[in-house]
Image 1 (cartoon, one colour):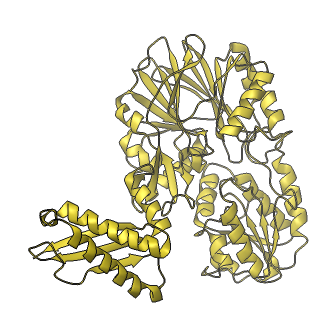
Image 2 (tube, rainbow, N blue to C red):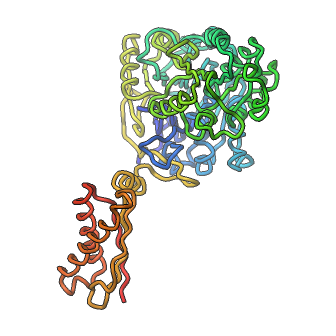
Image 3 (cartoon, rainbow, N blue to C red):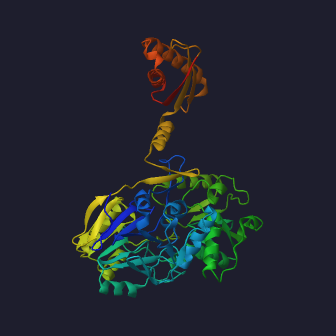
Length: 553
């Protein structure tokens, strides 16, 4: 536990997003209060069986909820707002966001049934406002979603620029360009620390422009005569508009396939974006259009098994099919960790005879994060005293720190989740650490991914399970044949022999116990458990998770 932040100090505390991409949760401490920036999720993989959504463990700030003055959201991506419906009820603080981000969040809160409980204050682009002891200003940036913001956090101890996710794009197509003048003005005013996106710190050059993507999508669609599907991130409103305009150029109708696309479409139109586009075709109506007259804009670019494109590829979608002669354009990048899922999806599409085009084949995607030349420009404008890389794996953070040093930043701080960093007064340094971890959405409940339940799930996944029920007489010996169930370890034709061998081992183990020990449930269970595990290990080479139930007559 750490003491509340003093009036003469400014603290930085990441609980998510430091040393990883996604799941962002950052706290700033000053004058007895904490300010939270973003509250996001990441997604499960093969390492988290049964878990689809993962979020930071907010235990520290839940325990200090009376000191939490508010949650400020930089933009509407899932890795920045996705955890709000799950974690806000235990925080209870007001939320601040620009109109588009607020519109997306409200739809998520409606689905969770808590829309009437959450206080959301809409802040205009470039707005300035105060929360507790923090004087905040939104600075407009560009990213792969409307209304991304950096936040200038002013305190008597110094000013922090929290960049959120950003890039430099002179022609983003939807939304404003980066407010270079505001950044330069802030740099002249003086910036103590810049907490900055590191995703592409290893990538040379520039990230590229959405205008180039639109031109390439338009050209690419002219190559195909069949049905075209485009997979992209639903939140990339500029990309959605580009697909629609490219489709119209080739006399095709654009259809949305996937709930998240429709949700983003409604939020965008409600806040003034996509206003001059005709309504999208529904997935149901798209099935009645000639194959050369439709472009399907689909969710599922990362191979999510329940997404629209994955269901189409497996032939399980109720309204949409693809066949030989059709094409799928992946207007997206591969998020680290999703390689296998995307590979499975593309293999399923290939089995249908569908032609697959990715960003490796043609420039139909650009990143929403700054490459090295963009980072250099940001450091030249802002000129912070301290560089704090975030939003990246550790290799990205270290590359970013080296780049900041080359940009003549006097001090860099590379931290991980749970590190408490004092930015002022004095040189920045770690002064402690608090609990940080991960929570997974398991069905309808949140569970710790570091807890016993997940450890047992991993053991069952890799080693199988065995459950035995033993009926004992008054001497502690078997009064009936042991009932042993073995799951996930043996084929059906091997099961009978394995159960018989395990039963013999249990019988022998009980006979070897002293009469007094056979009266002790704990001793009997352990002897039986070890006998079953050893037998199955000899048969199969693995030790299954084994449980023993006793019934005494």
